Length: 239
Picture 1 (cartoon, rainbow, N blue to C red):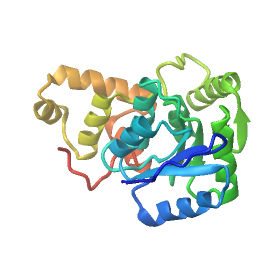
Picture 2 (cartoon, one colour):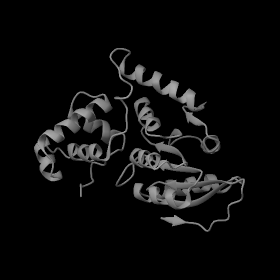
Picture 3 (cartoon, one colour):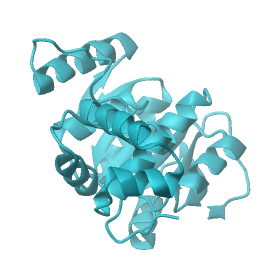
Picture 4 (tube, helix red, strand yellow):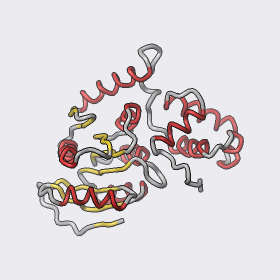
């Protein structure tokens, strides 16, 4: 975790960078350090560091990778919004699909960008969200426009019939994400219950919620869904 001495002017957009790949983070640093109206105040490489840095620096913008060790970018976003942090969060991902966008923006993101975005466009995204706007797929929204876009997106992804937008593409709770990590390791509900010290029925209830939120049919699809999008890491061991 790297922090800088504050020398912010009133006009500067303060920015925190969080990505666990040093080379990619260096590339982001190179993009923003040449911008006179943007100041990088700190850098981190884990989800836990992202939360700590936002709490300490209260930056205007957090540029955050979704696929992080420990807690992922979606969890970080959801937790910061629960804390009522005013920082605008720009989520970056190597896995760019429409359902991922819905998850990211419903978690509280201000923008969603693929990692192959052109540098000048990413700079513009940071400026847009610092002004209170939202950016998805090159479109700029205000809060009401974003809500309408999200509602239409959920309906398009799940179908117009019997859809409750409050049940689909909703951020997973910390416990649900924990259970999903065990699922990706091939653990049964009974094994998960024993590991977490909770009842078998409680695990089943959480799994039902996970399937509904991800709009998938079974635990195998849920595991593949999470692994592909970088929410969990196949090589990680649960502690």
